[in-house]
Length: 420
Length: 164
Ligand SMILES: Cc1cc2nc3c(=O)[nH]c(=O)nc-3n(C[C@H](O)[C@H](O)[C@H](O)COP(=O)(O)OP(=O)(O)OC[C@H]3O[C@@H](n4cnc5c(N)ncnc54)[C@H](O)[C@@H]3O)c2cc1C
Image 1 (spheres, each protein chain N blue to C red):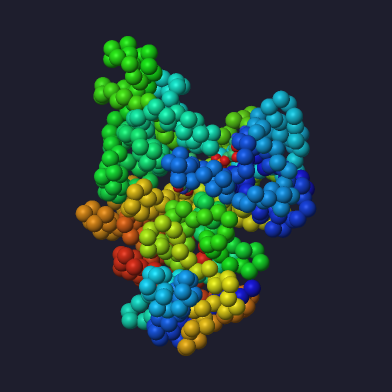
Image 2: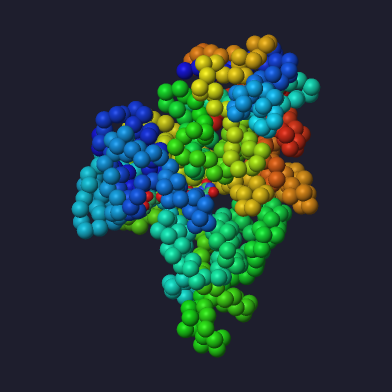
């Protein structure tokens, strides 16, 4: 059984470990377009801020690939999958044959159609290469504009701030973290960052990124920056675009593999073509809370999906139990915050408990539907996050202990006694 | 491989296990020193309607905290089965993803808010400090298979258990 894995990040690594946990011998080849060993994208903001070295971004030990007996093909992109021949093709035409294939190609920065985005001084933050490019643009840069106040945007903003830049975050929606948190939690987190000196312009999009020539033509003096929709102009030597990510599905185009936004997989992480699996940011799975198919582009889910894909590739039938697609933990300055599941209620058939104390940087919100916990936000005190998110994932009926969930110290002990 | 089994009915809430845990994880190695150093216990006693309830790590077979760890710091040792973010090649960054992921809520922030702190199974001791200190035998060190057999009967454990 010959395994080929496209990608060399967390989903791929977990698949390798899973395959090796049941099969010491089968050949495994990893093909990835990045050059180095697997690293954590999530730590790139720390690298950018200068608080973590490149070596400390690795997620496995140096001799991981040797120990696992993995053949590595790095710095090479797969351009297409050829299911009819059970082969993948690299740029240049070289082909690799497989019996089982895992597509774990992740996602790329989405560049919105804004004029000037392709110019100098404009970056995404997705790969080590991106982070290095931003770093080499730091000398001489005094001001930065970050487009998009999602998780990556805010992390980038904080990293650049720690580098001593004056940072402005511009967000189209009226709040920061619009996909993860509600308005109140966003308010607390924004204030925490504003106290530090990071500036926010909310409810406003970018019209154009102006390079030096356009800037001097319009403004009559040297500089560069962005023009906002409202007409305001922000001078900035550095622009980071963080308005989302798109799954890397180009290599399966016209193969017959079913793709929505990502590659659709079944309960065994298998695509619509037998023998071909997908996992991580590139895959579409069923969400534990909503029951709907969709992307779940977060680290823990990529890890779990990679593991399940690997087991199935190695012949051990294991179902993916569905994870919560939306679950995030953040701490930009000093207020920890966690959001899981449905936090902005789409209708009135939800029961909401909220304890909001912005002066104390404290917020606890629980969202229930038919006595099942479907979402939560914890700001300031995150002690019960794990037990609550476990209940969300399990769709547990909480009717008999609902009142206990409100306590900041609600924990597994309460469950143990209640259910004994 | 061995695990710590909790016999809830035997616990009288004396907190000796928490002191022993802190001592075992202190530089000085004793309780007074642990208090001066401000060392946290990794086993937690919750008070539920006046009843003391120890909450401790299960060192799960497929730990949600390991999947969630974006630094690669949280690992399950394939030989001992111990799950820890301490003493591995990669270091904890304090992102709190493991706190969000652990359905037993046994991982906490360090006092200075920089790293996640959890039970490391007292990997350098023969018997974990908390078990050794427990006078009422509420904590018992037992073989992992026996442990699993008992746990299968426990409603709360099954409810919380990571599903993937
Ligand atoms: C700045 C930043 C911060 C983040 N913070 C968090 C966080 O706090 N919490 C969280 O849960 N998630 C976070 N994420 C998201 C998290 O990093 C991803 O969910 C995770 O990395 C997905 O892993 P993956 O294995 O699916 O793919 P990726 O990590 O995207 O890796 C894809 C791999 O595929 C390779 N590849 C792609 N296309 C090809 C091709 N055609 N041929 C060959 N190789 C190819 C790449 O080289 C790479 O090795 C963050 C992401 C970023 C960028």
